[in-house]
Image (cartoon, rainbow, N blue to C red; front, side, top):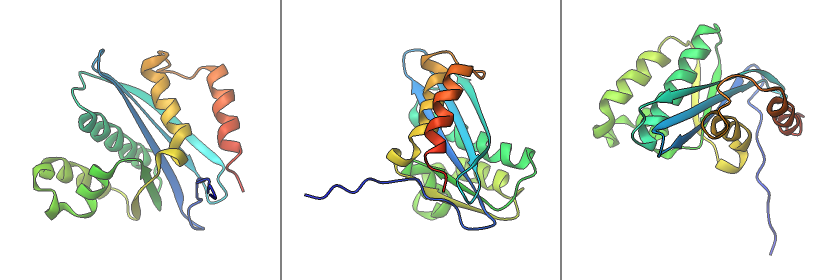
Length: 165
């Protein structure tokens, strides 16, 4: 049996890729979200993380995480961004809204945020290739790292450097 290891894929030339990770702590009703923006050779350009309170479901956590990442790209005046997250629901809510009528309100909010960007794409990323950003999101609630921590940064930077081409 041959095992094929999945690896992160670079965006096309001229595009940036924003990987988004979300982790929800059910007990504390909090979630952590993180995004990492990389260029077409895989180099990390910028990244951020934050916590959200009063989060009642995984869908709510992912909604807030994705919307925050989209708004962040606009705030940084970035364009030609591929948003990549390991979630089927909101990827399909945005790309095939008629098939997801129960999420109409969220779809409208996403489209309002995305309309601020001239060029964007949305892809579903495999959890295995989105691990680094998921660990950052998890660290927000599990380790209380809502702000940068040097020891965590060093380990995560190493993980992302392995993906550079």
